Image (cartoon, rainbow, N blue to C red):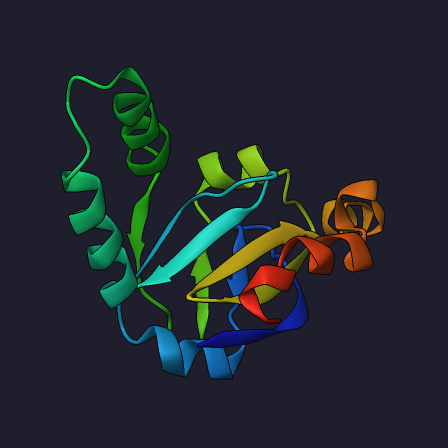
Length: 143
């Protein structure tokens, strides 16, 4: 399970250091793709294949299913770390998430999210992130 919040700078080649705890959990190969709310999603190999199996169950005749697959899989890349624990966030994903100099890397249970730090801070302060209100919506789960 991925948990925690880390800030790292992006070098001029688009490389970022993944926190060591996350590197250990991700393993040698991992996957990156467009996330929601303007971030980059990162999945370990097992979770990626689990999602792949689920999306194979989507109906080809469903327009939304086809759209989802295009949005999710077309920009995706299989990644590996260099010897320093860095990887290059692909240019298309850096542009999508507006990541330039500073990144916030957060663990969100079964995935990692990479955000432009300024965008992440704005999002966390937004009305969408009213902590008490969000918790009320999950009261039925016993949280």
